[in-house]
Length: 139
Image (tube, rainbow, N blue to C red; front, top):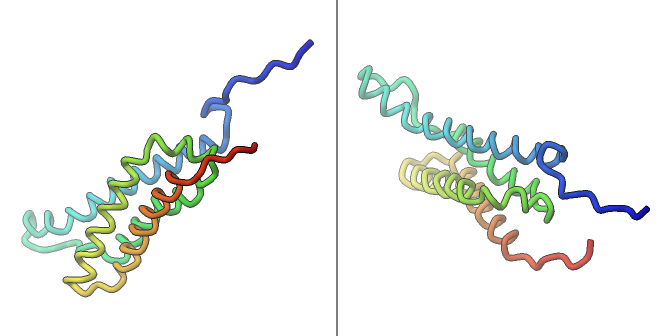
C-alpha cells in the first residue's frame, strides 16, 4: 500500500483557518461599527438637536488597530493565502481609518488619533510588504 496524499484541508478541518475566518469577520464587524459610530454623532445632532455622542477619538484609534493586528498575525505564507482573498476590505478599512485619523489629528488637534494614523500606515505597509515578498522555496 502506498500512502496517498491527503487533499487540501478546508476551513472546517483547519483550526488556524477558522481563526483567520473569525478574525476577518471581527475586522468587518468592527469596521461597520466604526462607520456607525462615526455618523451617529452628527445624526443625533440633527435628530435631537443635541449631540449625544462626540466625534470618535480614542475608540477610533482602537478600531484602527484591528486590521493591522490581523495582518501581523497572518504573515505566515499558509495564513496569508487564507487572508489574501479579503485584502480589498482590509485596505479600505485601513485607508478610511488613516484619512479620518489624519484629518482630525491635524485640523481638530485630537492627539490620540495619531495612533490611528500610525496603525493605518503600518497596516498598509504590512500588506504591501507581504504581497511583495519572495515566495519560499523550501517547506
